Length: 146
Image (cartoon, rainbow, N blue to C red; front, side, top):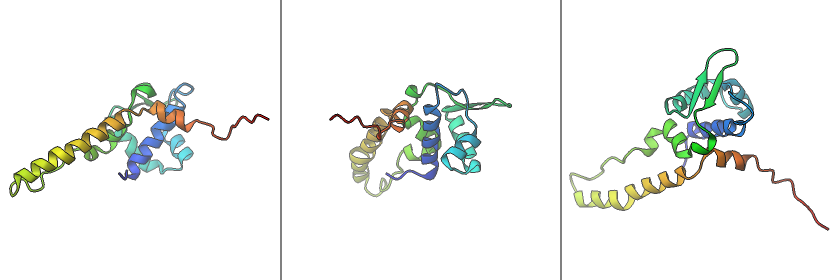
C-alpha cells in the first residue's frame, strides 16, 4: 500500500505532536513545518482536514496553535488516515455487477471486504502513542559489559 504525501505528512505531524504531548500544550504549523521540513502552506491544508476529522483542534491568538483532541494513546492511525484520505477507506465500486453478478459478489466477499476489514483492524491497533514511543527510542545507547 502506498500512502500519499498528505497522509505521510499528517502522520509525521501528529506523531511529532504526540511526542511533545506532555510538555507542550500547543504547536504551530510553522513550528511543525520547520522541524519536519514540510511546506507550511501544504501543512495548513493537511491540518484543516485533521481538524475536520477531530484529530486536532486549534486555539487562536499569540499563545495559540494546534493540539491533539485526545491523548495519543486514544488516537489510532486509522482515525488519522481516514480524516485525511477518506477515499482510501471508501467502498469499492462495483466492477461487473450488471454483466456478471456472481463474479462481483465473489470479488466483494473474498477480496474487497476482507481487505477493508484487515486494513481497518491493523491500523486501528496502532496509536499515536505507539508511534511516538517508537520514534523516541534511542537505538544508539548500547550497554556494553566486559
